[in-house]
Every structure is written in structure tokens, then in C-alpha cells.
Image 1 (cartoon, rainbow, N blue to C red):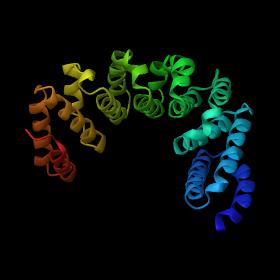
Image 2: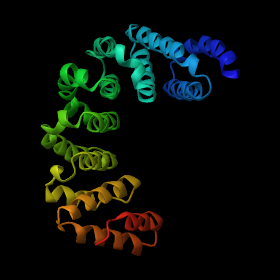
Image 3: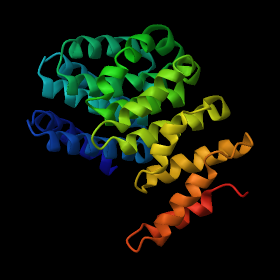
Length: 278
């Protein structure tokens, strides 16, 4: 088939693409590889394992170069591949963890943050190994890294909340403090909403209570898709608990958005439609 004929040519061009010094080119290359893997999964399944093996070896080689941009390339590619096909990596978890850990040890903060997001994905592959051998070391870096690269760390925490919620349960109060930390960071508001939303979705009523001042700050943030998702989740759990503390705050916030001539009216209406019935 056409994919079969295309793959050898594509594989030979990958090395040239991942040798680029442009972050944009590298990110586009990773996205292209993702599209190719998804196409193989759909149309040429027999080629999948050899191609994933080729890409994994490429990632390991890039990690060994010691160059920040090569390490970064390896990690964004690994994250994409693990998210698509976690089962393939069952036999690679500790090897890759060791290679990534060595590569980011003492590296710049942006490289370590990318590594955090990548390592969190090992929780998709083997939850037990992650909890027993990886989780504590990874989580110990959270508070430091989240202040510099909130996007990577928030994504990593969302991954952990999804895959190893019991591991994070004892760290719930620390994670709640990180929501507050994110609010103090420039452009950190949507990451704060995403993290709070993930916490509520994971632990439901066990995630409550939250600090009243924190919720008040969050309610008064600008309307975004992340805002809507967070407070829909919050309202559903709060209603199940028969708590009504913030109902009026949320109602007033929606009202002011609707009354604002420049407000996000469509998003506010969508928000109203998703809120639980009284």
C-alpha cells in the first residue's frame, strides 16, 4: 500500500528534520510523526511495531547527545508516542526513565520541565512501576518547576491525576496550593483552572473543601473554556454535597458577562446549559 512505500523515504528524512535548530520545525516534525503513526495504526498495522521501534531508538540516541535541543526533541516525541501507543513501551519504561533522568539531570529549567511532562506519561504505560520507582522523584520537582513552566507541569499533573490518583491522594493539599501558585504567575490563570478542574474531576467530593478566597479569585477570572469546564465540574460536585456556598458568586459572574456588551455571551450561555439543574 501507499504507506508501505512512503515509510522508508520518510524514515530517512526524519534525521534531517530532528537535526534542525528551530524549535518550531522540531514541534512541527513531532506533529507530523504523530500523524504518520496514526495513519499506520489505521491503514498499515503490520508496520506499526517496526516504526515505533525505529522512533524509540531515535529518541534514545537523541538523549545521548547531551545537547539541550536534541534532548528536548527526544522528549516531545516520546510524549506524543507514549500517549498514542502506551502498550508498546511496556518493556522500555525503566530504560527510558533512566535515559531521560540522566539527560535532564542538571539541565536548564525548560528542559527539566519538558522532561517532567514526558516522565509523567510513563504512568500511562505501567502504573505500578511508576508509583514504586518513579513517582516520588518526579513529584519532588513539581513546586519548583511549576513556577517557571506552568504549561508542562500542569499537563504532567493532569496526566498523573488521570492515571495514578491514589498516588497523588496524600499530596492533595500540596496540589491545591499549586493552584494558588499558578494564579500568581503571569498568564497562569487558565492553568490554575485546568489543575483545579482535574483535581475535582478525579477526587469529586473528597477534593473539598477549598479555600473560600481562592474560589472567589477564580470565580472573578475572565471567561474562558477552561473557566467554564472548571466551574461546571465544581458546581456538579458542590450540588451533590448539598453545598451552595459559591452558587451566587457564579450566578453573578455569568450575569455580569451577559450584561457586558463585549462579553463572551455564547460561552456564558454554554456555561449555563452545562450547569446542574437546581
